Image 1 (cartoon, rainbow, N blue to C red):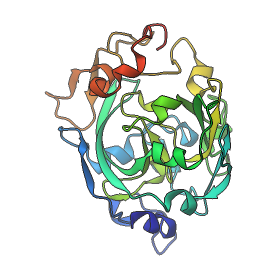
Image 2: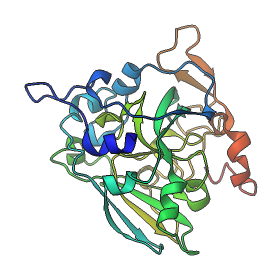
Image 3: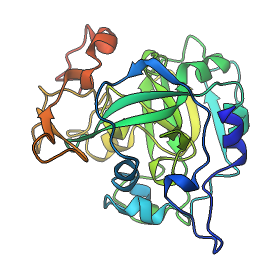
Length: 293
């Protein structure tokens, strides 16, 4: 299965030991497409997805992650499970992945910076993983933590964010069928610059909710801190649902620029909940989305 391949193969290298970002250098994954979750839009190219990134652990420029993340060691890797759950502990990546069949889902991705992509992710429902650890009735939220290693992640030597990067979801958001734990894209193992070996994908939220290179998952009764909300709470809310009616303080969110699209079709209207309103709007029925942004 694809999970087994992930346990054995990461980013391949050249004879000189330099990591290659091209698709041909990444292990293939066996992951049938789930037709229920396919955005009927032109997919963003592998080249654009892997060369235009926000991953501040490797720098603030869009090209920095591809350039600086290739030395990241994603094997061995472990994830610590803790908090309000019946089963906790530290698990290898292989332990995390082994029970789960991988599938491909094509999701829209909308960045808070007004650009967007359409990405064929490979992964499995986060809910399937969380249920294994038997969250208790006190588990109202799920918190996630990124690897903290300034030796491998040069961006962490700077102070533009508090490190490590942290994110969180309400438990019903985390258990929603759309929420994906991704291990690959375009049928290949996830490139380092895209969050290898394990990242979160929540397609109705702005991209910064999709925490990368996850090393800890914690069930908690209280809303967890999140990195961008800590850095600028007036600009980046905990929920971060895509909402064209609620502007960022410094720019409109009513439209977006599709990366890789032609000059004449690149700009398009932003859809509420990034086009997933029919699936997720009910989660927020009683909430004022201007206050809880």
